[in-house]
Image 1 (cartoon, rainbow, N blue to C red):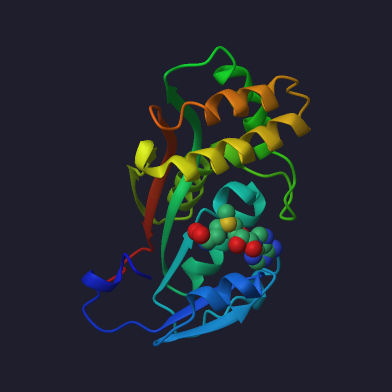
Image 2: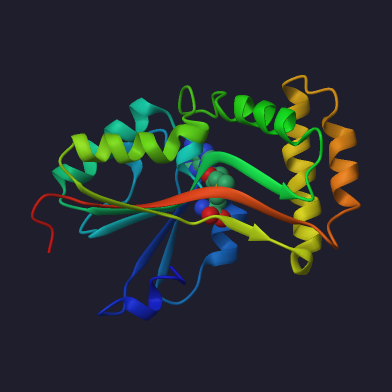
Length: 207
Ligand SMILES: C[S@@+](CC[C@H](N)C(=O)[O-])C[C@H]1O[C@@H](n2cnc3c(N)ncnc32)[C@H](O)[C@@H]1O
């Protein structure tokens, strides 16, 4: 919503959709309506008269089947789709740590677990969504949109590493906790690059 504001030719009306009422309340404002919806049921999405659907940091949770059904539903209604922040499975840190690779691999395995939509696409979400929307007849454009965090985002880096380590530990990465503790000690010098891609999909003949 914030990213589109400067480039919209007309003032857009946004329908904010999530299952988390607190997140909806945080983002509600002028020109918005909020919709507490369980998106597993695509028929519950408030799509009447919509021209564009956007999603942010969502597709990694979703299954191939769900994204396929979403693409077909949007095509039927001639609605464009912009999905931002699709995790691509590649995380790099400087300075490097001996457990970066093992923690990343365990985190990526965790990503593929069912988050309610069926087997999650996880790190494949960007490439899978591009393939699904292309095959459904959309014109697809992709670009990298990595998170780049440095010393100015020290607290965010700490929280991010704790979250990554917690997921990796659930996948039996025994060194994940120690890895997060070492990373926490490096945030005032270190940088991380968390790979994401954005995707724009325009239905056939979209104006
Ligand atoms: C990684 S967060 C992204 C949140 C927000 N879009 C952003 O970019 O900050 C994933 C979001 O998906 C929502 N979510 C997960 N499963 C859902 C479902 N079945 N129906 C609706 N929302 C769901 C969660 O509540 C959470 O807010």
